[in-house]
Length: 130
Image 1 (tube, rainbow, N blue to C red):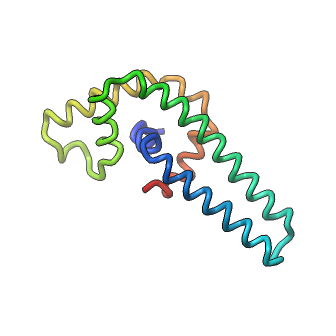
Image 2 (image 1 turned 30 degrees about the vertical axis):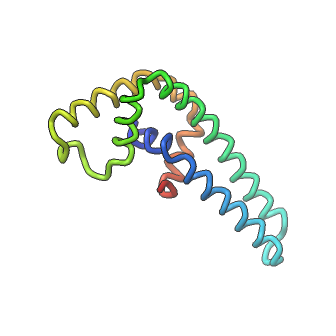
């Protein structure tokens, strides 16, 4: 997974959490219409709750990684996570700073592979990030 996606997830986890809450509520309300069995909707709700739990575990790990960085480096990571264009559009000094901090983040987050389920869920729900 690209480190930029993890960085963007870290700084926008609230939007994924809100979207998953809305999906859970949607499934709960649809279960009252008796279109399908309650077990069908219960399984979907449990899957969404499990996804929230896995994403929370991943976020806590990333929070531990980001907490080791300085305030300036966190600001650069937040800027990089929200960046919609490539680094080539930035000034050379700014691009160099972003690359340096992104590499530092990647080195500190070397154990992210242990959170494979969470990383897969970030890829799956990445479109929900605002």
